[in-house]
Amino acid sequence: MRRLIVFSSIVFLILPLKVLGQETQGKPITMVDVHSLGPQKLGNLPAVMTPPNNPQSSLKILIGKQLYFDTRLSKDNTISCATCHNPAMGWSDAGPTSSGINGQKGGRRAPPVSNAAYSPLQFWDGRAPSLEEQAKGPIQNPIEMGNTHEVMIRSVQNIKGYVEEFKQAYGTDDVSIDMVADAIAAFERTVVTTDSPFDRYARGEKNALSKIEKDGLEIFTGKGHCTSCHWGPYFSDGRFHNLGVLEFDPAKPDMGRFDVTKNPADKGAFKTPTVRDVALRAPYMHSGTEKTLEDVVDLYDKGGRVRSANLDPLIVPLGLSAYEKKALVAFMRISMTSTNPEVANVKPIPASELPK
Image (cartoon, rainbow, N blue to C red; front, side):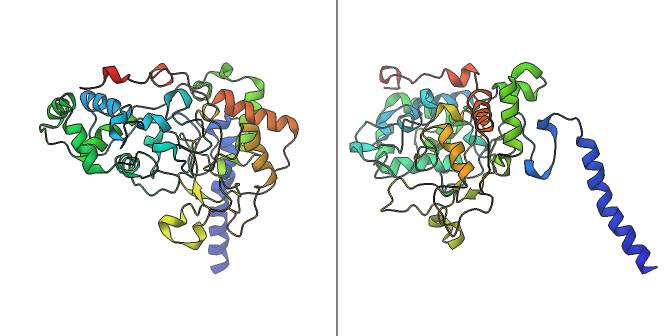
């Protein structure tokens, strides 16, 4: 009797796997739910979720957009959020790492603001738990905007136009750092790219991708192992990995996630960036040391450039052919680039049009 129970249990466990295999036959690659695709299928982005304590409003979004482009938030009135997260550069900058006040160079590449609303943690090391908290960081970073929250708030309080807008939006003219951060985050939650060729393909437009792009998608979800980390509609697992990337400054190794967690296993691990609009923001990696998408594919194909005790076990040589590399780049460069104008065509607000 016991043998029968054990045998029945084994059959029960195997049967769903067999059914899953049958169900996925003939489905578009974006609908196949197998281990290589990770916990979520590739597909279209869902609506952005907003925190209960910071609901969206048109006025709050406008204030946030103005603040985003306003250099007066920095110590010397030269740096804005858009300096390092420029809409014309894929909501990042020219790199390899970002510049702040007095021409100071940071040690990391500017991550994109576009679609950041879908990331559970912000910054390359995940030290900020929300867009609101992220917005506060650069203002008082001595290398970036070089200000203090207190001095920045006094500057905003001295701008009558901002005071009036904040009073209308929040019911008080006593502006706070939380109100500034909330407004910037509200604007950033509108920076969502939803109309790439891949998105149209995922919605059923079979001709949205060319043959080489479709081949690249197959490599992305298969032999390239890309979906081990770049999965789901956001094309990122939101986790942290050591990829064997070259350092921006070899004399000062960047510990990445370890600086936050102090867990030795996190040394050299950085957050998985989204692949959406990746062609718009070269160079690549947290250090900006990979100049082109071709370089990025080469890094993965080699199984990393630096051997490390903490190298993620997912990073292994891939053995991609020249055509497979070309197809993978074509998918990322063409298929993942959005064309929705409310994001692609955002222009900086000139100083003359900011609140006075």
